[in-house]
Image (tube, rainbow, N blue to C red):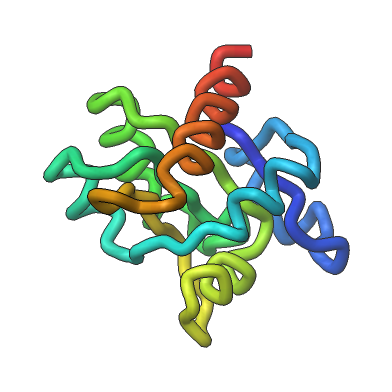
Length: 127
């Protein structure tokens, strides 16, 4: 698992200990600058995504654990951000979002940025 520190107002008690490994704020900013879709399971099943981002403060965390199994089964990288509220804001949703998938549209100007982030996540997951 990879946990991204997205907010200084979160406390360690808010984060489920099953989500661990902290990365730097630079990658967090890159991730939160991207737009995503909340249909994470569907995109995983259809195989049309680059990676999954989940909220580490999801309670109970078990409601998104099936995504981890699907990611491992389909060899899709995944990361956690501290705040499901920040994840929702990133996806332009006014409510907390427990998971989103990042996809690349045909001809997207974000393709290189998304692929770079995906490679960074893959390298961090291997360590």
